Image (cartoon, rainbow, N blue to C red; front, side):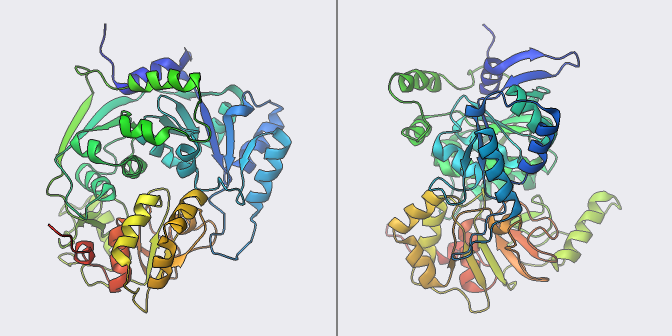
Length: 466
């Protein structure tokens, strides 16, 4: 019998046909849509007079345009329209006021909409976040969105396959965001183009499920089509008793399926990379794409000597970010800190931040906000008293939503501000016109908020007893 990768096994189980152009039709187990894409997609659906094939497998989530500041109840047109379409088409809606509310990539696994061995489609590039639990997910465009609504299938070219072996053990104060940024820095923003990636190795074994979500979330930033991690006992424990997880005899059936999921020992990948992570240190971006990243304490590199596109991009990034070749970012003043987004807004992220900032104060000139990824995460943090630690330290404590990651809800920085952000993108003007965004881990962001400038977060970690 031919050996198969985990990706092959899930793909084969869901492939329902081929088109004349060679593309395959992949059955989609769950379809989650955020409000930015609802108006156009459902307008197309109405004009074509098509029906939704599986209403029970489609869920609408409100996250991008949701105000997260406490006491602010502005409702965007997108929110109003999603409510109307959900009601008219009889679809499940996770409303901004729901106890299940949150960022689509956070609540999908949190509620059990995404599960191991499933396929999932979402009109958002970071759909691959749920690959962390062994769910094969794909981002889709508006026309693809309409096709999925009508047929519950997605038209795809089967990608090539790559395995990233992460070996060794992470040092204290180094996390999944640092691993993700290091991968992008080493391989480049286009390295994953045309590939489905499987993450494996001892570092993956040691990571929590939430940390794996951070890693998978960032895979799109180096152009991966999708990514996946084989489910293990941590995954099974994490997925059990979710609101939409199978129960009773159905649970036993899916459990047997999940335990058999994994790449065969002698299977072949089109490409493999092995990265030793034991010496990895906290990472921070210096430029305007995630590959323009360096170890904290390292110097901003010189632009490539060749007068090509890479040279021009490097010069442009330095000008926008206000940094120079050979500069140490340590000590560079920070105006704003954002801890949130679908990359780093889960309970483990918040616990790490609370441990670092407890009993300390945010610098006077820094505006710092913490935005949990879901209402459930917010409530858990408040149950543990983390919100008190944050507010005592001078952080704003917000409701769940995308917030400053994309700024679609108006939560943006001011021209010229320097922001340390735990989000996944640092493109020009993404967090506000002229805002200079440095991507980093929650601990690095929190430490910068306290110091008032870029700093090595390990200097702020509590002393541990040996």
